[in-house]
Amino acid sequence: MAKKRRKAKEIISTKEFLYRGKTLEELKALDVRESAKFLPSQSRRSVLKNFNMIENFIKNCESRVSKKKKIRTHLRDIVIVPKLVGFTIGIHSGKTFQDIAIEPEMIGHRLGEFVPTRGLVKHGSAGIGATKSSRALKK
Image 1 (cartoon, one colour):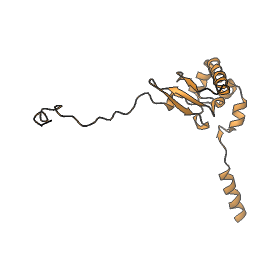
Image 2: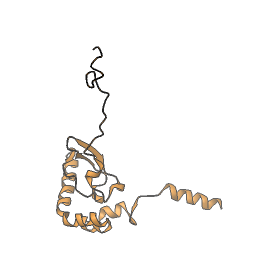
Image 3: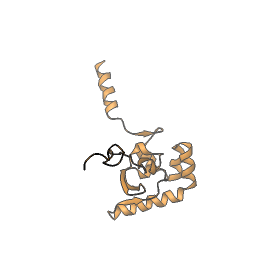
Image 4: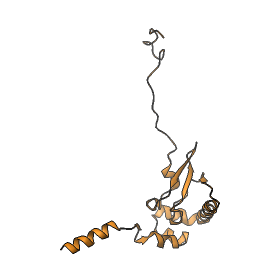
């Protein structure tokens, strides 16, 4: 009985990432169009329509990494495919580039989902003269 528990603990601790029954290495070995078969329907349609753009983006990423340059892009609508896992990409938020490390759990999502374009607004308290009652206060 104790042996079964040890084996179960070993299996749980060495669990690797699976996406729809495939390991990350198996998914990375596939072509962009072949890996699209494992994506949700909307992402699959987008990848199959724009696979040339995605392949060019991957080639651009690989060439910039080999030159030890940062990857920066305005393309927020690109679907994350398995070949992009492991890259750190600077995604434009409308104002700045925010670096995002692409992880296996992000497969099937779009780049723009991980960089918000709108920030939280935090208003301070009103200053002197901002309201009628505060005009009588001394400065």
